[in-house]
Image (tube, rainbow, N blue to C red; front, side):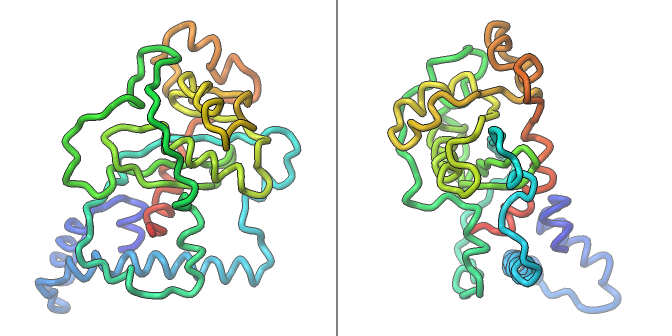
Length: 265
């Protein structure tokens, strides 16, 4: 059930209905099964993360991408938001009341509260084909989180994530994630950024004091989205025209989206 929910993205409701049909004649399925399942799966996911941490420590493995460790050149940081990872507010989340050993393993992907950057400027630069950073309206008031914004390295290793609470992506998410990447050992300012609307990202680090060290780093737009950008934008940000790119974040959500879900703080 853990794999069905976090990897196959099967809903709690669908899993409970499947269990009723599959095991109806073998054992009674209580009416509260769906509620218990929604409480148990996050707890189990956190326990899995803690077991992985114990295994990593016992084997002497580092908590970092093994490939990036041996790279001296600039490291790719790919960023993207996923609105499929939304969630309703839980009024009875028992998992939050349980003290897990190794809570840092659960929290380590998520942007720390003191790393949240306040940025209210509009996205006026770059081509006008993409306005997601300026989206303010939308019928998502019923959601506690509208999605997850995350950064990975160029080898699909998850680096950092943060909850999105707005109808569209906003500067606060990409800038807050980049701030935490700068504080990570092995990355710092020796990075280049791949982002769906990278053409709108150049001046925001310049206006953010804590990100001044990456104001001139290379920026590209992922190959999946670049075809929708203006021709002038493609000449400057196409990953196939500019050497050393060719990476897109979309392929990563399939693999690490379940890890972000399981480690929800």
